[in-house]
Image 1 (cartoon, rainbow, N blue to C red):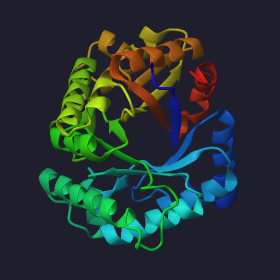
Image 2 (cartoon, rainbow, N blue to C red; image 1 turned 120 degrees about the horizontal axis):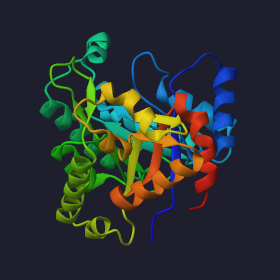
Image 3 (cartoon, one colour; image 1 turned 90 degrees about the horizontal axis):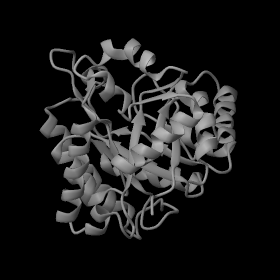
Length: 305
């Protein structure tokens, strides 16, 4: 039986306290299950933004999507996580990533390091958070036991292995560093390559003794995908032709079936998400703030399914 859909929106802009609260309430009205905040310089600080979102809403869970581990000391992060979980009455979901934008580390005066060093630091952070947040002597204490749900995102083997060992939610980027472009510029991989990454993840889950997750039975690890564009249109192929320059290595047909793009009317987009859940296993769908309203009618179509 397929896992029911969940929908999250990654909120990126902060104009004022009142506008932030109203935006969070609007997301709740549209049916979003999770209100999310990223961890980039220039965006709102995640934890105070999430506490304010909790005060403005009743139903949605609150999450980081995702924290840049390179910005954080594990002991200080454990304090933030436990405090935020308590102040949101146990609604927090913790998303962590290795970081991919060198300019932000430079701006913060923090070392960027190699991909290996960044994943090493993330691995250390995950291990320390597990130790601290599950320690009954740690203060403050999180509300959720043994700790808030953990989301880990990535595409490479080491990230997928880490998620297979520790994560409750595995988030797939479906993108890689664009060759010859500035660090942090990403390009989509093909749907077939994405299938290969998901298959690798399930293999790593089985190796880690989480075979039930790999087989899709029992308490399976939830799979997440971030949609890059929600495009209401009455001509999906014409819309894809407009976007072809942004993914020159992919054919029109590959773009039409790619989970990064959600195109059509509400019924067609709902059918695409059902197909992506069947093919890739994605049941937790995230969009960026500028797509929040456009996905609303699709959420209504898929509510409870």
